[in-house]
Amino acid sequence: MKDRIKESMSALCDGECNELELRRVLNYVGSDAEMREEWRRYQLIGALMRDEPAGAVDLSGRIMKALDDEREFVDVIEEDQTDAFAGAVEQPVARKTAGGMPQWLVSGAVAASVTLAVLAGARIVNEQSLSEQAMFAAQQPVKAEVAAPAAPVSQPAMVASTAKSVPAVSAEELSQAQQVLQQYVLEHEEQAAGVAESDPFARVANFGQNGNQAKPR
Amino acid sequence: MMRTQVPLSLLVFFLLVFQLPPVAHASGGAEWLLRLSQALAATSFHGDLVYSEGDQWQSLMISQSLVDGQPRRQTEFLTGEPRQQLRQGSTLLCLHNGPHRAGLMPDVFKGFEQLTASRLDRILASYSLVVVDSPQRIAGRSAVQVNLMPDTSDRFAYHLWLDQDTGLLLGSDLLDTSGRLLQRFRFARLEIGADTPISPSETELHGHRIAVVGADDVVTYPESGWWPSFVPSGYEPVRYARSADSSDVWHERVLFSDGLASFTLFVDEVPDAGLPDLSQRWNATAAVVRHVTDGDRHYRITLVGELPPAVVADIAASVRPDDHIAHR
Image (cartoon, rainbow over all chains, first blue to last red; front, side, top):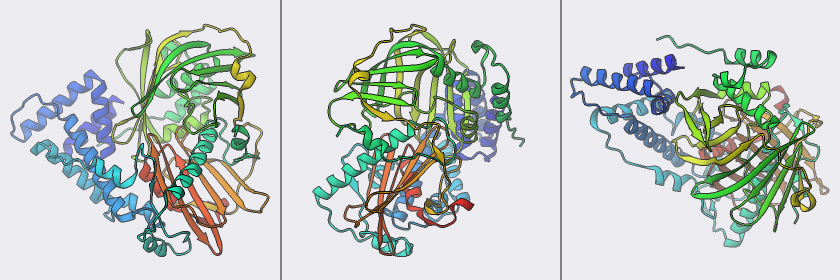
């Protein structure tokens, strides 16, 4: 594993390291003294090659932050593109290409951001809260993304267009929808707890009824 | 630049076929995961632990004994409303006031029990295992840290701390794709090998039953149904059910798992699309609800799982009728 990490470090110096490799390097560096020393050596070599002062500054935290911000940036792009459940068919593709950009371009953007963090001191704009507010409302009662009732599955383009019209949703409807969702989450928890013998397509004869039996309502 | 691939599946094969070496000699991440699973199945212990989700902390007391070679685990939640859980074989018994709610009784060992070769293979296909090379200590015991780093950014990472002597799980962190902590637990005090007396507990006498999936389920394979056209790599359907209620209204449930994390797809025919679409997240769990029509029928598509919210939304958005599921 250490050899693999060293290869990734070397790839990082060569500009060939992808984001996942980079994260793995940084995580490993954070937990292994020997690799941390190796990482410092690579940084020192990099600084000397760039004719910079060879100070003992560990840039791993800064790089990780740049990566995080880049990820949030990509998420925001996706959110802008997909707006609730619009573009039902295209969303998985959108994730792969991040806002319509090819994957290699996204990787290039990540690499550019990391390079910037290393070379120029990383002037970072944190989009985190924006992204989270846009996408999901953690720990909040509910965030309703309202499409037109029953968007036709046979017309994904229509789904996309109708999703932009947001009819008013009453508090009562939201509350009711959330209660229904809670039941689904509970059922998922119960079924996931039974992931033991994972025969593909093992049919649970009373799947969906177990939960009902279980709840003393 | 040369990149080497470690034949981990080969290691798993040898570990399962041949006698496992003494625990103290375990070194690889896959071997430690197997030790962990074995320890949960065959170790008696008693201890107190702290568990957190987001900024919410709870303390729990867990006792496990072996009854006819099978673990019998009693969990008492010491924070918040009084509640207890007893797990034995394929049965969960819960004791608490009011209805059973999502998140009421978190399982700190979820995903690491009954680790079969096929499940371990799937884990190894999606995560890189790193055994951290530094001594650690939890609950007064020497611990080995094993990190499960996802190979793709569409799932969460796990940091585990295993007892050096027995392989028992002493603590874990669940981290999102940005390294933010989603869930954490740590034993504060732990006695291993201490058999607690077996007597009917309050939970056993008065708790309500939750049937955990058994091994004698009928295996089926759907020819057609609602299916996601996008599923992150490594996730496979592990359970499927389709049923009609007394009103001839269809319900489908599919559970997907990558060996550790899981998500469930629910498809329910509904009389109309009266409820709004929703997206919601509770720390590690994200859920999405959308409504669609197919001809003159209305359906509610719900996806719930321990995945990044954007991934859950992607999967939910890709669900549509498919006449060729069996041929995938």
